[in-house]
Amino acid sequence: MSALDAGFFYAESENTPMHVGSVAGFEGPAPTYGDLVRLLLSKLPLVPRYRQRVRPVPMQLGRPMWVDDPHFQILYHVRHTAVPSPGSDEQLRNLAGRVLGQRLDMAKPLWELWLVEGLADNRWAIISKVHHCMVDGIAGTDLMQLMFDLTPDATHDEPQDWTPRRNPSDLSLVAGALTENMTHPLQQLMSMPNVGGAVRAAKGVAQSSRTLAQTVPSLARQAVTPTARSLNGPIGPHRRWAWTEGKFEEFKAVRRALGGTVNDVVLTAISTGFRDLLERRGELSSDRLVVRTLVPVSVRRADERGSLNNQISAVFVDLPVGQADPVARLTAVRGQMDEHKRALQAVDARSIISMGDFVAPTLLSLGVRATLQAGQMWCQAVTTNVPGPRVPLYVLGKRMCSATAYVPIAGGTRCSIGIFSYLNTMTFGINADFDGYPDVDVLSGGIRRGIEELLAVATKDAAPEAARKAEPESEPGSRTAKKTTTAAAR
Image 1: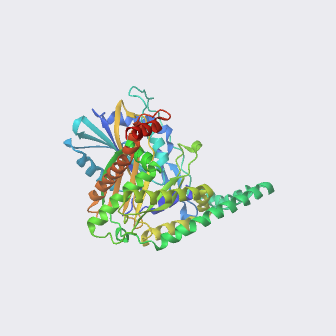
Image 2: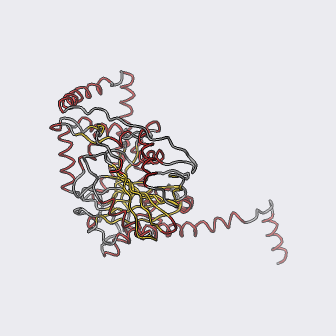
Image 3: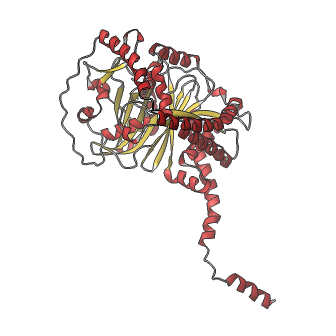
């Protein structure tokens, strides 16, 4: 495992299951359980990690390793269930919340898939779970595209026999870990640039330093900005899950009228949801109040799509929940995101992530667990936007009609929002601690209200501009002629 993947593995505990997931809805009728199992068996050779389990290195002399599971049984990982017919969206949401809130068996390959039948309108669903140490959101999208088909009449290979590779002994694991710990730093040193490269690197460092220096004031502002710390707290074993959605046309209309990016508009709508939540709780104490959210950023290169390791960095964004004006909220979010983009362009985030490879595995394990157990008050939410496919996907000839993401919570941050786009829809999957968010529906409803609020402003601002453009162009000199005629009439 990489240091980042190992960090997600070490973060797992009884009250903090660290898997990501999704709920995908399909047009019916549902396939049989056997057909779904055979489909997955035919796809598993494309994702060997799904037949592997985590093998810790004795005495934590090295980071955990992936090894083939000699007892792999797909019937354990693929489950079959149903809601009372005709099942509603709320029943599916409640079922998904219970399934996604349960921990994976850490002694087996770290994934599950549930076939759900009984939904209204002859629909069915798939609930999927995969541990975060195995895949990040961007890679997860690639895996979904491998499992799904692009046409309803796609054919599939027959499942092939599989023979697991022999597991290494404890002695060989220790020897390999010691060798890796000695050679990896040397390999990093050997890859240092030559004199010319060193000069270019020095110039790059100087430029990066100037850009980072420009971000120091914003970090200082964050340190003194009042945050909604009432949203932080201990995390229990149970979860509440809610979702809402918006259309791409809505976000693009706001972007065209008010500026920024689609992601800026999304974060602004989420700030409205948190504003409504705090206002309902009577905790909207100041117009300077913010909800600080961690926003993961993919640093995966285009040629790395499909790899199963995590390649993510993160930034912190202050959602201006105390600000009553939605346009001012958008402006504040946009300014922060522009600043973060400049900083990420100036800093090699991949190199920063890889610095974890130099941390001793035992210290890495202790550090991650101690941090999560102690909790933190710096940020109140996690907000991650995963771009999904813009083309229809199918499973066994059945079209996927919706998809909602599930993102884990940990370390005192009791709410996460997974944003997932598919076709012309963007969904918001809200995962929250059961005791900390009894009013999670206020948050989901507030996000939807935030979209509508911004759209109303954008439509209002766009109407005069559209009317002006619709006016017929006057002939050259016609304005002067009109004035002359008026004067003559007088």
